Length: 274
Image (tube, rainbow, N blue to C red; front, side, top):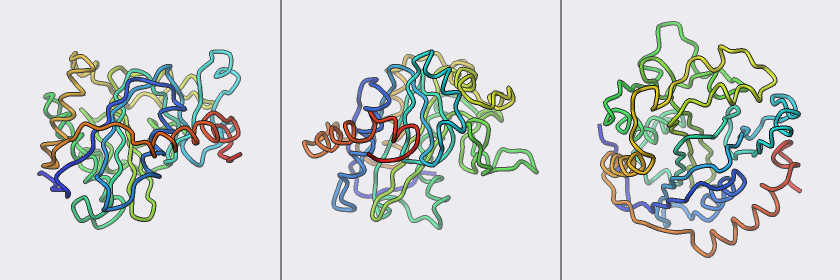
């Protein structure tokens, strides 16, 4: 079912793979610069170079990560503005979107907004021939959904997407007055085991219930998959994607966030602004 959004156009910002600090600064700059229904909503597609660990907004790095291993292997750690558990970002396509509540179909709850805003992912995976469904619809009876876990891939939310019973990617949301921010990952390769190796709790089962596109026999190039993702987003929401770049205000805000927040261990590891 298509969810109709308004207005008819969304800004599309495609950025090449950059550092985790830059990615998080760009995402937050887009959110801070958004002016509610007066602004065009935004879809951003991006990647990570080098591979990076991201912490949920309220996690403490020392409590959940093996920081000695992070340092010795030079794996960067950044903090998201969204909640949830640790994610290892490697071979993936990442999306973020910013919109006003009025710019999406009416929803009954914050949880229901996940259903609306992840709908394009469901159609994307199905367009690849995958048997994709929401966890709330596809999980065996008695499965615990919504349980908080330090490692993102160890748990399932109601509107996480499953392929053949396994979680594919993850999504998180943040709400401000007049704005919804959401981002998530589309794994090309399964790096969950790699990510688990940086956790303090390395229980193997925590990385067992996930899958990637490669494991589903999807061998399309990153560029082809991104083009399909754009098509499915546009079709699902019945909107036109308008190629765009960061505005001067967004670039300025991004630079300020990089200098004052995302290049600081105080923020990334402890969640404290300088």
